[in-house]
Length: 123
Ligand SMILES: [Zn+2]
View 1: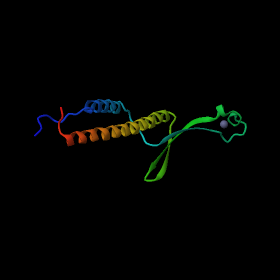
View 2 (view 1 turned 120 degrees about the horizontal axis):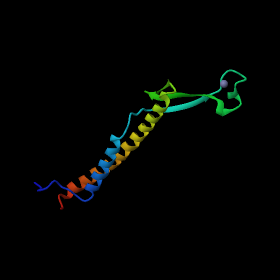
View 3 (view 1 turned 30 degrees about the horizontal axis):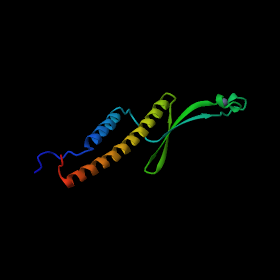
View 4 (view 1 turned 90 degrees about the vertical axis):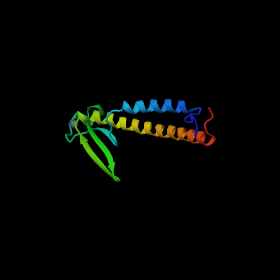
């Protein structure tokens, strides 16, 4: 039986970075998968300014696009909900990037632990 629980060089650094990333996860707001589109459209009235000037087009019309079991779903959003969903989709991207960083870090930490276990406690 080893007298202490096999700490090894690098473990603290992994722990620290892991805790830091986990804190960022806690700061995460509501999130949603998919893409939020902000569209500006021309109307059917031929003399409307929207036909001449792109900045006079109508909208924005918000649309949320996501996939369920390979099928694309389109949801129309109200002007009030659009920016909220856009922010939520950015949170989702942040979540995914945090998750992949946590996973990469975990892999390194686990490898270091496994290596440490093989040689036994050295400190
Ligand atoms: Zn128009």
